[in-house]
Amino acid sequence: PPSSSSTTTTTTAPPTGAPPAAFSEKIRKRIRIVKPYPFTYATFAKGRWTNRTILDVYNSEFGSYPRSYYEGAIRNGRITVGGKIVSTDYKIKGGDELCHVVHRHEPAVAICDFEDKDDNDNGCDINTPKYITVIHEDNDIIVVDKPSTVPVHPCGGYNFNSLFHILSDQNPLLRGSLHNVHRLDRLTSGLTIVAKNTEMAKALGQCINDRKGCYKVYLARVKGKFPLNAPVEKRFLDEECSTSETLLSPHISNGEWTIDSDKFKKGDAATSIWITNNRGELKTTTEGVTLKDVFQSRIDPKQLENDGTAVEIPVERNGEGSIHWLHLACPCEITCHKNGVCKAGNGKAAQTAFGVVHYDEETDSSVVLARPLTGRTHQIRLHLQYLGHPIANDPNYGGEMFFFQRWGTQNV
Image 1 (cartoon, rainbow, N blue to C red):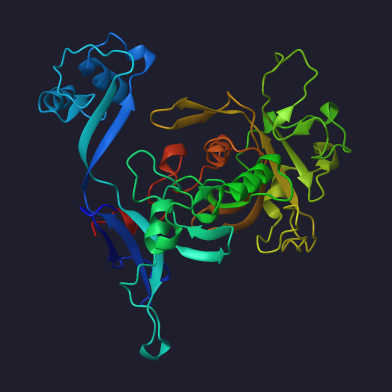
Image 2 (image 1 turned 135 degrees about the horizontal axis):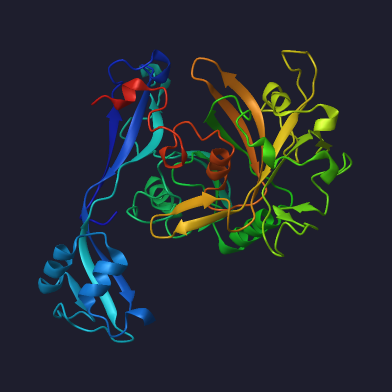
């Protein structure tokens, strides 16, 4: 952060009534706080802004503040054109540079937990600037465990509280040498690969785009007995496909479907559900395979093959080793770029495979393993909502902010 700001870590105490499993005397939950600092937003005039007043543009195009704020900011010189103070009725010209100086307050973000060490353990002090857990590092890449709430790169209200800046604060030698390979949503935690040079970033990025030699898997806790709420009317009918079709069939490729039917317009993305065994072979209702079979099968996320398929393990109910995957092809689209709101049902084709890891009766929730074949914005969250099993604590797409954590609603 700039000299006018600093970072602070805050240790959170267990809230009253918190379940014992959620906290430990030796594990401290921490957040990172960046002190407010002055920041200048600068942009060149867009074509659609030409001949419009500066007040109208800021009020309609940005909208982070009320109109009265923008009036005062223009008059007081916090909003300028080409470094000069202008009136509220100034009409923007092509090539104008607009600058807006604000006192920026970034939201706090979670950082890695701190584990207390015994006095004779020579553990690190809590003031040591360790914010992100590094899993692997070499001359070309660094693999980290990104906490939830941390964006990968500066966006929206987050700047210094983004992954790249935090890693640079943790290790100043990384400053200016980090390059994006892939991204996780801000609220998603998990392994993130960051390249240390442009060549490696391009090579790994191409590998991920081509789905060659790599795959992505996610774990999510969802509401209900997955996938019993899925819309069965969207499942393939027996007469529409044969049992010999597999995931590698030319009919199904990265969420793009080839459909020979008058029901769909050419170029439309199809929406459908189907079930396969662990080898990718289609299982139909004629064979007696239902959504219940998917629910009753179990996948061990610690035992995955190199292609992302699961290692067969016995199912407790019948002692068999049959694993079933539920696949969903459902297009996704961004409905509001400004707020990042998305929805399923229209837009670009998207495909995800789901398997059940565990079901918890007390919370009536399932832990599922998700394998996305495409990378649409909020794809997994949207697909789980579409299937009737939203991520339990995802309030944006059908979940609850404090799912089964009544203590989370208390003031702490």
